[in-house]
Image (cartoon, rainbow, N blue to C red; front, side, top):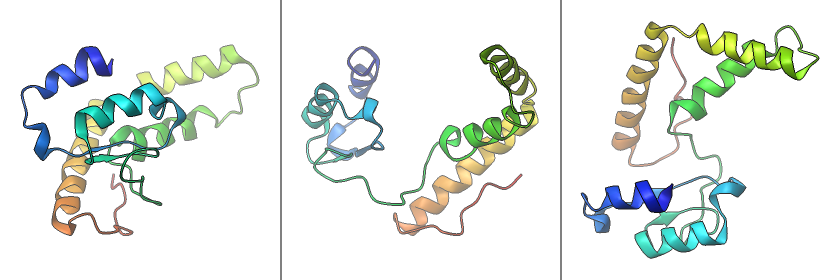
Length: 132
């Protein structure tokens, strides 16, 4: 995916001006992935095995990470599913019940979050929370 979609898209941008940051998830830190990202971003790679280490307690920047997965999980496990089928049914139901208004609010919060990050120049943001 990185080779076929992400890297070609970068050809539309000045990569010398970009930083790439990813968390320390094992799937993100395979040697081949890190080598490819180092070749592309050089010293402007923030990653578990990159030139700049992933900062501890770094905030998640994507709504999937800082809101949606936790929201879905909190509802999926309410009735303590005992089988994989029950769990899968709960996941489908919770995802299907997400309304466009919630997604719009998530996008608004994402914009505010990015504005705050830009203004704080990357300093810690303990007061940032998701507002519904």
